Length: 242
Image (cartoon, rainbow, N blue to C red):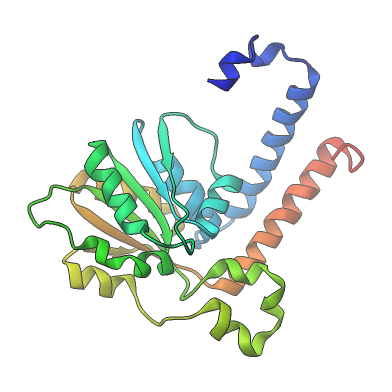
């Protein structure tokens, strides 16, 4: 609605917009080059590929902390998808219930992207009426804790960091699935994640797709992605323009 109200076609708005679009294309190519260099699952690639796998007309429900940030940075621009998020009192409150509520209300494909803490914090959301017909696919990033804290200064205080901030729990989404009688699949190849999302949606019901990552490796990968984008922009338009 905002872009429509701005007036002329975006292509007619001068060089400023064109320079941003060109820079965005360069950045996206640099990101893809890093993420597609191997078939190892990762949080940025999961965000990019899950967003692409949601069918047109579908709903993408995203958790707080890293998932919504990774979608902001790495999702390829597209239309046809409604994105839903709620912050919650502590960032993770009520995520499962929000996603299932969207599935009940939307009557269209629903895919949820979350971390393991968000899933566990509201796991009782799966206690739905057994007669309720709900179709939703949860892609769960399993890194045994809160991955976002690895990006903050307190990560340097290794002795207390794990206990006070990362809060490892030692639980698995497979345990949640077993308790609630849900389908669960562990995705070990990054290139298969989109296919698994599609297959789970086609099967109907509630499904959990587990993606195992390592918090330290995720922090390092984000640093490599930032460096790759910076280098690509420097090469394309020079550091002064960037």
